[in-house]
Length: 212
Image (tube, rainbow, N blue to C red; front, side, top):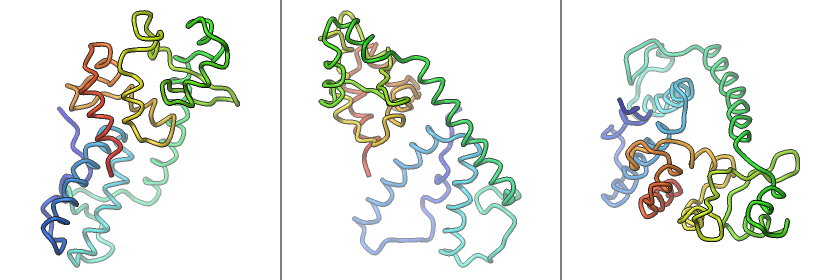
């Protein structure tokens, strides 16, 4: 069953922008954000995000302050201690995920050996936006899925186009994006879609991920 985004309940609420164009733009942005949050956040993170959205809805709708019941689900709201515990769990979860992602990377020296280039070439390609790397302990680490012996210059076909279209700022966030299933890609990750040759679809998803 696909996950429902934390703001799905808010669409069609009482708040109305003054102009139809602004209303449509706000709705489109909300839908995109809803999908992105549902894809990226854990259950605990979603609950914390819903709490923030509910607070905004109470202000807009004139709801009574201090309500202990969720306006979205009717269920009891999480306590401050529960939210704090969720934040701590997510903090440690983020570092565990980072370590797991780094296990599937190689060094710049190993990339140079793989491609038969100088050691500077991998760094130059990162600067040019044709390879993705994440810095760890002062050194660049390169996800191995980027490389393909049958691809142009030993790189997976279409990867530079996707990297150019993907405007996410964090290198770790970009790495997570590539490895996370996407509804618009048939629940495949962008990596798997690239392996299947669906470059245009991945580029379109990358553009949507960076849209405001």
